[in-house]
Image (cartoon, rainbow, N blue to C red; front, top):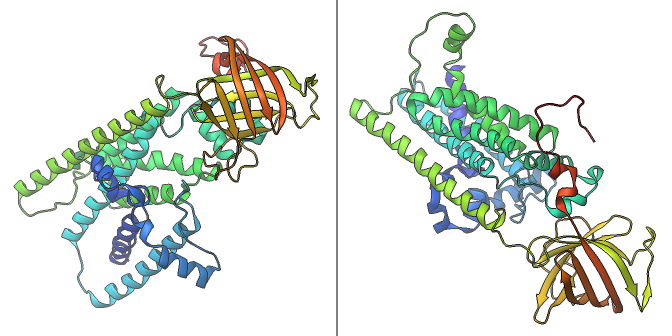
Length: 436
């Protein structure tokens, strides 16, 4: 049974990490930029559409084609591919068992363990660096500060919870980075597998309970860590539970010569450092470009509250039943804006600043609400053309047309630190818990 399980793991995890993950692409480090495109984002998944599409339609009645514009790793195409890999692994294991009568595979085991260590280590470093340098889970945007908690999806709640406390997110990332680095060093690989299993157990639990679209990958990373620990569990039990001595916990040798194994060990360490340094540099660049203090922001960056709203020369009172009047206008990214209707609905739009202090607002294609504005407008004409006047840094005046009607809008800036989420801070002493 042990040999059958080993054969199955070799086929299943070999195919899964080759086809359904970015592991091999991640091992290229900064050279990924040379490849680019779908290969960098989706690995071999970008070329398995014909297979997953046919299997999905034939056996499951779904169109299992990869959506390349999606960030979800739990798409139907990925699940169908995992099913295909499972079927192939079962068949291959049966044929292998029927034809091969060998009782052990020392060299194959050594190379399979190395393959699994590198794949899991690369994934741990990738996700860990994205948290350690906060690019995966940034803090809430200005628009998200206004979004009612009850309108958030469970995944958004988790994302914003981690992003609202950068030290917490960085600590989670540091654990994953340490696990990844330990896996690249043969002498510490076992400790790296233990840390990876503990870390991935927490990640998988979060993905399952908050409906995050990386359930399949996190589950396989957890399983792969357990496979790496499988042969050591009895001896770990002796040390940790029975308090007995045990033989040294060494990694299986790749070569018969000591020199070859030493060279291989140093190459693994060098590869881990190369991926860590390259990945760190990439995420640091992304953070500076998109989230850092010098990242591009709108000319009118901020939350602006409407004080006066005049249509056709007549002032419009702030009634919650009014579907035309605005309550707030938010500028965040250079080409994005969001206006808030009187009923609280947040509507994302494209914002273009033209010469002569002119602002054009255009409804993105296919957007009916929410906060994820698309910058694609499919050539739609702007629904608002406004002249911008700014008497002082905290006041704004807009004049022009809105849906074909002349409007004048007076706005005042809202201090972002007026939101408790941003101003509460940290307190050692709390006589009463603060939950408001």
